[in-house]
Image 1 (cartoon, rainbow, N blue to C red):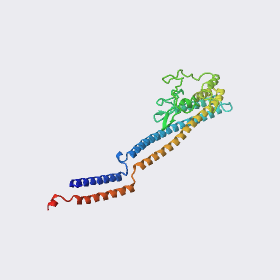
Image 2: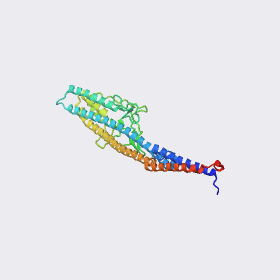
Image 3: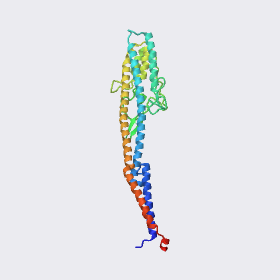
Image 4: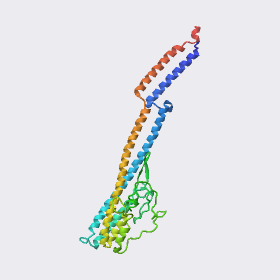
Length: 348
């Protein structure tokens, strides 16, 4: 077989281009410290890297959801705890004024003013916001759930936030459940049921009657008005805390000892109701803490997996770089000898 000069030139150029291409690739890997810089370097590895990065983005979003939900729940739990403290104070005042030993009409009127302040503080807490969302309005997070009389204009819905691929967490607790005792024993879950006592626009179907009149009628109002249902894990009934406070205030202002004495039992039920709500939120926070730890571990594992696939082995890279450099120098040295003869050399 005759080896022509053109074949030698082609072979020399091919070998030089190949060595330079490999040297450029290894230099690029050294600069980036990445084994895979484009999909063609390792199609299977590049596919796995893209899948890992997509999964990592999901983990980042789930972590943000968990932190946001946790903050909302913790602030809700703190606010409900303040309601419990106010109920404790109201019970202390009710016990003090339940007998004639150290109390009289004037004293009870003054205490009634303090109960009114406690009631207003409870309404303010019920209308608290976390960021731009009301805590206790259900889905209606952009409108204050309670008016100045304690009437509820929210709904009974519980907002679910995804905290994992197949898991969601309820971030809120409706004010109708905490303050009015509605569905206090229902399991955690999402519902779109609307309070049948409210119109479509959120206003009451009937204006709640003012708790006014002779003191002898307040005992019946105290029994019927605050009670929403007669079932519960912790006691005989759920109560409307706002109605209980209003009844206690009127009992104090009208010097009705029977109303004051009966209100103590309802305040106890209200405290149990508050404790049950706090326990529910506490269990959610515990789940979120566990989920946050898991999510952070998954993020680390995802980064490690991506690094194992994508990052270059520096020891192997240095060896390949030196080997390719030597090959290029050898190719240049031998190529010069192979193509240095020309037609003029043979004519001399």
